[in-house]
Length: 136
Image (cartoon, rainbow, N blue to C red):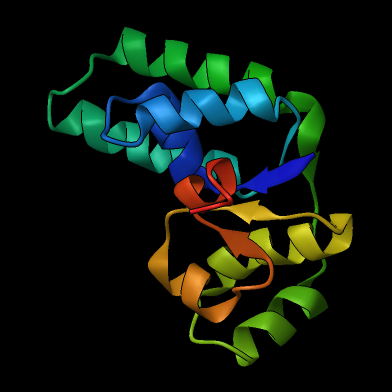
């Protein structure tokens, strides 16, 4: 099991330069864990695509449902104390620290492309590339 942040979910469902790696990650590590917050963040990304006319409402709803189905049994609450402690020791947002807190609780890694998280939590956070190609 690994923790993934919302940007990895976006890469899986929306076409980006990281999409192939997100798909590979899911094949290699099919058990993804997320804090409950992921859903609000993903909804926000999808509404942005809708408002820019990059996706229609039917597609947005379909993508949201697909992602919810993938992650429904892997959503976790995280403690405010853990999140606030992590945020106070870094320059990351409390939103970002929810993902780090969950990785800490589950004693696993967080996969993210967020440079700020990668910089602040190098022992817990891994980029897609470094996780998929540890020898590089």
